[in-house]
Amino acid sequence: MEPFYNYVVHLLSGLLMVLAFAAIYLRVTPFCEMSLIRQGFVAPALSLGGALIGFSLTVASSILHNDTYLMFLAWSAAGLAMQVLAYVLLGRLVPRLPDLLSANNVAAGAFAGTVALVVGIINAACMS
Image (tube, rainbow, N blue to C red; front, side, top):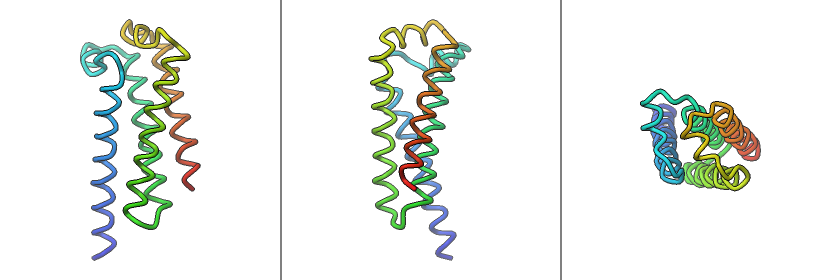
């Protein structure tokens, strides 16, 4: 029964970590992605989607490579911080990024999403 219990605990914790990341990420960005996505804007959906996938890879790697639940949480939190930092740095490298995403510039959204995905992949690999 213990493997099933561990599965449920890690699954629910991982999903909660992704929800927490999404809430923090949406607060860090200077515009309302969800409102724009509801209006059919693709660029913010690509940006947010890349960030969610990138962070999810980090959470998955943390589940796979950490022996204790607390280490899983700690490394997932570190991955969260790195994803947010990546967005902040990208915003400095591309100063008009929020305006481009709000204007539905798909190239900017794809670029931001790709950067977030790359950071997530590298972050996940660093945990192995």
